[in-house]
Image (cartoon, rainbow, N blue to C red; front, side, top):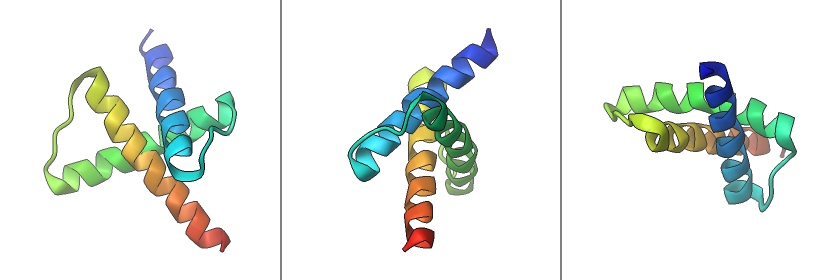
Length: 79
């Protein structure tokens, strides 16, 4: 059951980051991949900053911030 919640958080975070960064989501599978990678990036950055975001909302925020950073890095590399 935990993996389903993890994937759902990844999908929501990927969609939110895509909406914030470029105006739309990228499809369910891509949103999940972006959100899951973003969760790792966001968790790493939040740990470095000493920020603890617990619970479901905190996980979504952490993953969304990380996914937005990931999308920004991809856009910088592409241009």
